[in-house]
Image (cartoon, rainbow, N blue to C red; front, side, top):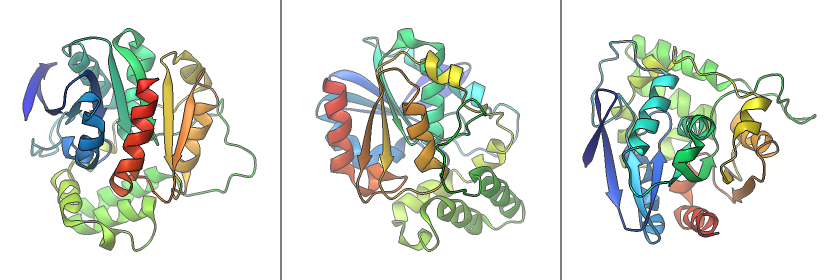
Length: 270
């Protein structure tokens, strides 16, 4: 583990492999360990740099302070990438980290060569309507709010199960490997920050502003808003490519690491 000093914070990261830098940004409850399962496939062609965002493991945050904001995390990733050489870098984000990567591409395209978004998280505003006939699903924000209530009541395990099964379906929590569960437990208090993180919805103007060559990836078994949002964004990001990882859900790189690595490596090699 190493660190870069960014915006008065020591941002931790892991670095594996050699070649062009690929910066990887985890999602909700993740950290640099999120990418363990694909470090092998990706590091065959890239110097993979997996970051831990502000207040995530290895920090053990007490949820005190008001700097757990989406804008802060975007600014931190920009400041981090500015220190990575050679430039420009390839950037990949998953879920909430995909939202962060999208905002980095929107704000600082000069820092990026290519962009990979694995089921980016967030909401669409009215200028980006979902396709007609799309099934209605409860918003994930409601699950997050419920998990926050459970954490404040002392039910950490219940909070994690509630959130995870809101994405992967009822009964999915018991199938999560022990190491992956521990990673989520290590970051559970970040839920308390996320409830007021001030994440803006995606707009048509936002999507059209992204000019970095972009790949959007979805899991073939993902349901709900996360299965729709990336497809809508792909339709409005100029020249965007798409890929689906069959028989995998939202954490597709854990469930199908070889297939995921092949898709990403092929896009980055183009």
